[in-house]
Length: 315
Image 1 (cartoon, rainbow, N blue to C red):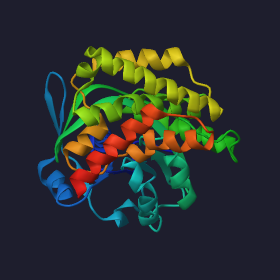
Image 2: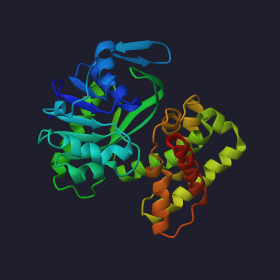
Image 3: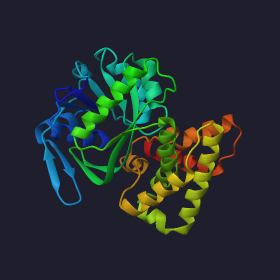
Image 4: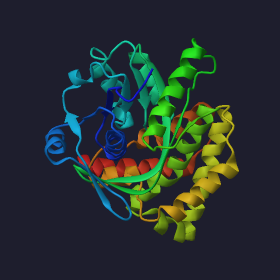
């Protein structure tokens, strides 16, 4: 279904969208990166730079600010912030080809469902563990990671053969671009695992504007991270999502050790005076906790402080 001539549209020229758009372009796929102006024009004229640990790589890339250009795309990667998901779906809906496949590369646990509510095309969630920062409108810095996990959150897909075919085609496409990609056997648990990790890291990094190394060196913050984790695990259990606690703790330790200079996406948003995704991270934990009558004071504190900082930035 998907091959080397497949038109790919990447929507959102932030760190994740630019990074994957660049790698897929480098691999020879016809890629269009959707970005707001003046960023789209800058990308067309200057190209994209990926700053690796040992070298900078320049990639000529095509960009557009016109959603009509999503027409004829066979694969659409959605890389916008979670609060923009539903509005984006409505904007691209008139233009998407009936057989297009939509892949959500976003934080949170329900973006794919929110896309699917507004689109007839098949939508699948994807998860990335990577430390990537947007260093300028036309450059991203890679600090580490980059593996993809894809799958479906539908326990009983209407067309399991089509679902399997889509996922295998997507996996092969990314693998040909040297992007390691795994098809998950339990995507709900995998999404929740990353969601919980984000809830542990993102708010603290944002409030203090500190990197992961600084967080790991302070015993008081380590205790706070453990308290946040404990609350999130209680909520996950109440939502009937079994999580592997050892796997989560191992991932937290790995992130602290291997991505020491990285700040969370929430921290990066606040630094750029942008609205964060906190409503869909710790804020979502609060919503689910309330429905199950679970006390989550640590998540409440993190959420409240980030919202306070947002309010200061946006008046």
